[in-house]
Image 1: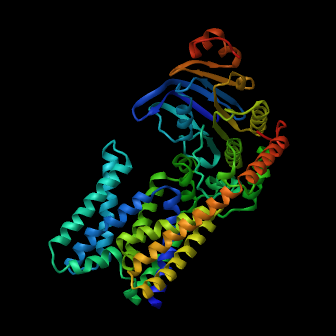
Image 2: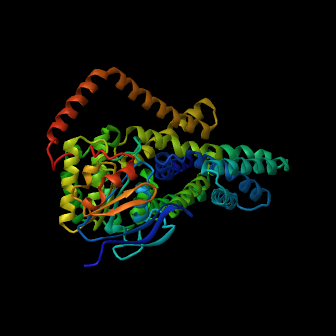
Image 3: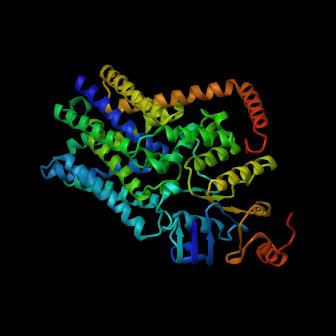
Length: 238
Length: 287
């Protein structure tokens, strides 16, 4: 089975300015890689590189065997703070349906398969209860759910998610974890950026970042006191 | 009068299609700058005995090319680049006009339009413009919509943010050029923004926003022309004043409704949120 994501000596950054370098990993289909680090440690930069939003400064990276951004219909990206404007005349259902645009392209028609994927994603995230609510009428948590549903609606083979559990309570975090487990069980590779060490429980790979790769490997290999001290400056996991 | 009404309806249609995205993307400054940026092109073409429309197209092209050049070659924001080209083009337009005594009489027409004197040929071209702009908006609706949320979302959905931006700028340029003959370069911006802003206040769907913008534009045209006829006022300017007045009235009504029901809204929202949170506070269901 070929890896969903392969990075070799990757340097991610903006323009010629590297933010994080010497990134090497293979992520298999159905695998979960968790990027852990403080603010500004390079997590979001690495995710944006994998999503094809910014070009690698150096090194190699392949997503589903192609350069990042080459197959948007099979890769879904959820930024940390999706930009939303209260003036946008869009209902929750419209926003989730935008997740199918990558598969529909410019001229493709919306089909029953698209509708089914949208309905399913809304149900999984609980957005089906606010189908007709506009962005301006949603709470922060409801907007967060709606954007997650948009990403799930793409039914991608690779999910790149930035801090999806930030600001959620225990039930919310567990719900996100459950959704990610379901995605992985159908073969979707997931890369998750987070501050929370608990998010690494299910991971196949953990990468500790602090403007550099502190450590990468399985949770038991990586989440050692020495590595956590190097990453966060302390070792208390809670 | 019928020609003026028909021209107003067509201008309302093209401005609703494009103005919706101008308002949603917060591109009002680009629209304003483009509306003024065509002035030197129109003035030069008129002095040279060429078509003002051709001049307007060249002016819009130079304006947007200049903005792209300054943005790309410097670290200045797009906003600053637009501002620089805006004042440059407007100043050149005034300089060209000041050099010709013959042209001064036409300046009012260029700036404020002559909706009561729109020819059948101009109406024909306006109709063609509505069809072309409508077709482009339909084809590009997905990247346009994504760009209203986030440029990164455009890219990760497989569309080009830069091409999306260029097409939208081109549509604004075409709308300005096609409409300036009827409502003038200064006032076409009002038709781009005011009806669409009213639509944004009322609509919950994009198509509804466009429809409200179109209807508001048509009502503004009819009411503006009627008022200007009876009060002997400038027709184009009266149309725009009505369009902005409609926006202000809708905004005021919404504000009054909001202020008159603070407790009901608060209680309703709280109950709904509580109920909703309760319904989704189980793993695997809600977040």
